[in-house]
Image (tube, rainbow, N blue to C red):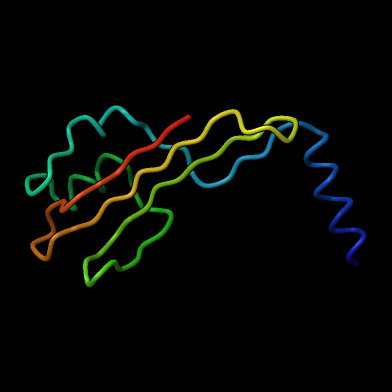
Length: 97
């Protein structure tokens, strides 16, 4: 069983492409404003987050996407949003390759 899983992973890597997460449009990132942009607006821009969590009591949403080709990272982006108690954006970070 362990060998079959390893063989599957190796065949995926050799066959070409591997996607992780869910791709999302990055254009709306420029319009995010701390203490102004709402949680509802973030959802309308980017859809359902790939992960939800808490940071120091504040709700967080993460959007993440990676694309690998022949075992090399070709595209990567992540948006991390922290919300205030009133559901406006407290802070956010965006990284892309």
